[in-house]
Image 1: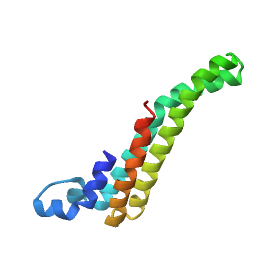
Image 2 (image 1 turned 30 degrees about the horizontal axis):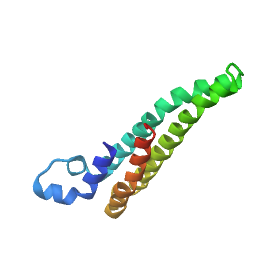
Image 3 (image 1 turned 60 degrees about the vertical axis):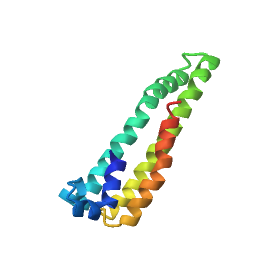
Image 4 (image 1 turned 135 degrees about the vertical axis):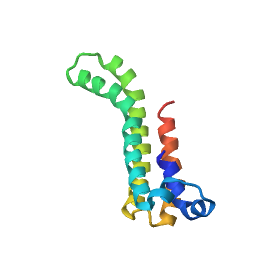
Length: 130
């Protein structure tokens, strides 16, 4: 959703001329960049959510020495990999969206760069599910 709104910001003038009622056309680029930032935060938390649910209990059990080292390690590495990939991907995309939000959606070139560079973040999040 966030990426789509950023793409709408970059295409706002063309959409307005064509009569397409996108979020930035109807409510302005500032509102659209704020909504995109909100969706970016939700996406980042959602991407990390599954990994955190798996990682936190493992970490607590290891701290309390409830499980053997071998059992904990076999579960910990995949969970840690997922957490790292989802955090890096979500964080990268949130950081790019934040840059657009700081300009209140006014810097179209920065929004285009955020859409392009944000693909790496999306790929990292998708890789966390493998």
